[in-house]
Amino acid sequence: MSIKKTLRNIDIRKKKVLVRVDFNVPLNKNLEITDDKRIVEAIPTIKYLLENKAAVILMSHLGRPKGKVVPKMSLEPVSIRLGELLGKFVKFIGGDCIDSKSKKIASNLKYGEVLLLENLRFHPEEEGVFFSNDSNEFAMENFAKELASMGNVFIQDAFGTIHRRHASTIYIVKHIEDSAIGLLVEKELKFFNDMLENPVRPFLAILGGAKVSDKINIIENLLNKVDSIIIGGAMAYTFLKSQGVSTGFSLVEDEKLDLAGELIRRAKEKKIDFLLPIDHTVIDKFDYSNRQIYEDTKIQITVDEAIPEKFMGVDLGPMSIEKFSEIIKFSKTIIWNGPVGVFEIDKFSKGTLKIAKNIATATDEGAISIIGGGDSVSAISRSGIDKRITHISTGGGASLKLLEGKELPGISVIPEINEIKKKC
Image 1 (cartoon, one colour):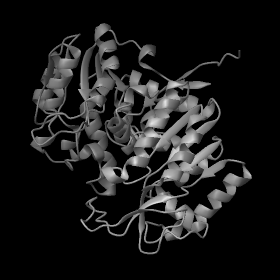
Image 2 (image 1 turned 135 degrees about the vertical axis):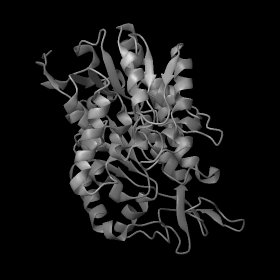
Image 3 (image 1 turned 180 degrees about the horizontal axis):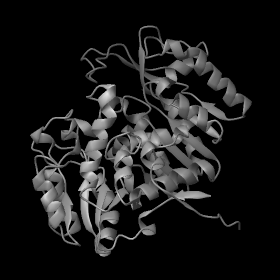
């Protein structure tokens, strides 16, 4: 079969290597990094390059500056933390990632040294969404050429952005001598590919979040692969309503009711367990946009799957948690994407946190567990069991695309190596 070139397949010794990393880390009001996981995950690729005498030029974005220089979104704090993790000085030039100063530093960079360029998204050409259709591709191509001029080799190691058609993700490959995927991207792709193509069974998917429309393609793809699907979060109410169950004033996509019913029907045809909540935590008042409840908000647990007329669902009930826990316990491959309640509020986080802990327990007992990025990662971190999970993805959007069975733009442009798969 054909596989993508990896870092180990190309000659990087004594070359200037441009690496697209994802250092889009959270900062507090004092511009201090509150979670350095994405920086930590990039370390193996950077160390490999340094050990092989390459000059390393790192490229990343941070936040959404919308094509303008926003000082509080500078990557300078990242350069400091990266230096601490590497145990060596990381050069950083603020202001503009492709100006003459940055290019001079890149040109003079010695083998074994590291340079971090300033936020790519300070340039509107990186995303290209700020131009008319006629000039969009031209602008992105030119920006990619400017970046590529600083190196000989391009390494794609930003799993969190490879589903984006950006200048530093796809256009840069056209303008550089050679390119490959880095160790982080290689690891991410292997976990998802192994899980989707050759899972240890029983294979369970747990899907949460607000909208069925966000997960339609995932459910359709997984119906051909899994043994069981658990649906939680607000999207569960659309599925329940499609079956004639009362959902009160819970968030429901009425325009997706027919589709929800069809997905349940197809799951039954394939003999896949399609599990919906059988009870709920519900409330009568909720400031959803600000994720706040009022002092006089009534909180109740329903007796079954039906939600009273003047209430809305915000979390699983105890019977649902117990039922889902049993399924998780006996599963051998588990993929989880999306919280099963409004877990940002402590009173409504029980279902999501219990799911997280159950997955960790199943992993302790030999199951393979993959957390597909996004809010699920926050739930895992909050539960304090992240080290007990087989793999926690660094890219929510990219994970979703892989679960949909879609090709990732940032991967499709990387050259392939033909390899004959040996049969055991």
